[in-house]
Length: 436
Image 1: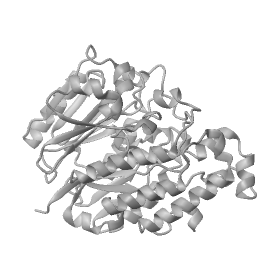
Image 2 (image 1 turned 60 degrees about the vertical axis):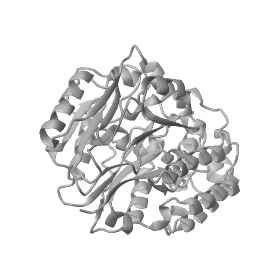
Image 3 (image 1 turned 30 degrees about the vertical axis):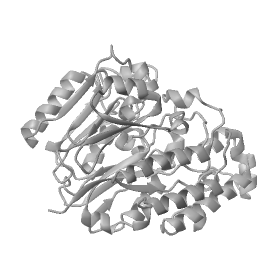
Image 4 (image 1 turned 180 degrees about the vertical axis):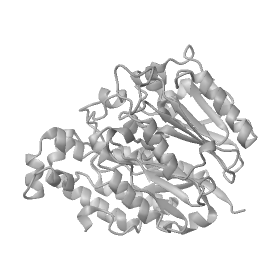
């Protein structure tokens, strides 16, 4: 049996990171709209979290930011002339959307299935279409391009085309997906969470904020990733939670290996869902899922969203023990509600103000030693790459940025220079439109 690992791929924050309030239903994003952001600080904070995990012995890799402002989209929408002229002419809401640096939240970018689980013996990667938000829907094609470069061995990996962007197949990636296993070298069980169904009436739907993931999208991803239907389960997110600001399920539940942490109002009929999940895992897999339920009386939905406790990143160390990487904002809550667990707190204030905690920043891949060795080595973080990236950020990123600054042609030039250098540093080739 090959040795197996969970590899975390974190998104690097882009040079155009702002607080633009683009995601309706994301309370933090709306709350901090039009405040000054610091792309430099945001990038350093996220990179420091990656470095901490790599120093723990966790396999940690980096994903490059996307090209922003995305001039091909603006040209596709009818703007012509020089880049500077297009930036000056484009309507502000459209320019802000085409300048979004949201690809840093890699948990939304893909849903993966290890070759252990897939019925064809390949590792599968399905980029999310993110179709419920225009600014995020722009990410799908670039995500696929980057995945095809990093996971280029077609004998080992299948990188799929994102689902059709039409509403019935809305897909928000692994933010609504959890894989359970006893150890990384064993077959896993996959839990998919959806907000609503597209082709039949749901008994309960949110009243205030939109539900983003559809059942139809989740089922299509499971099929593409060649998962055994007996090892999948599809459950509906609580409409009450969505209306409280739980725009993705990883804001209200999280899991790692055989451990599941969830709020009692995470799902429709939460107790029934968890009971069925435990029963299926025991009957099919032969082991017991360990669960911790956080009652609403101990942590309300409002406080769960405000603290981002459930968006903590739980990882397994080399000795088999688990460690929780929690946002600084939930320090008191985490210590009270997770007694006995090892917890460290990450300063991710810039990301948190846009609604992205530790778990949002990473996509999880379970890979064999052979699969790891097939990946381009320069994307794996070590002390040397960490120092190079710190220097790269300091030289290319602004310390302060407002949405109104996005029309500055100098920012476009700075961003392209930064990404051109980064693609060389990571040895990814010409992955950006402006390089072609």
